[in-house]
Image (cartoon, rainbow, N blue to C red; front, side):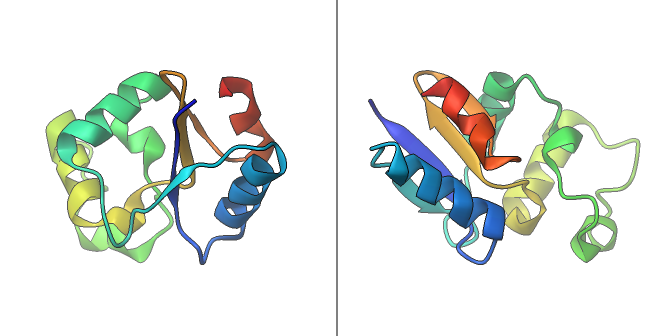
Length: 115
């Protein structure tokens, strides 16, 4: 089983999710998305797997959300995805991909459903 985690080592929920995967015998490919952001195509595919709209996957409390204009209600899907690619700090974390499915690890246990 191929498992990927979009991970931020400074985030407690992300660390807890990675630990939970390891405790369940899962060796995940760790992608530190702040260093290696997903492409627009990858992010679009992740959103489809999550059945979410871009704004639902955005960290709206980050200062960059308003500073980059992402709070503009007129922005379309492509503009919001581009905003997350250009400012990956805005992407909610962690995101786990497994078995053709995706889950956001909030709470961390929610990722177990896709394994």
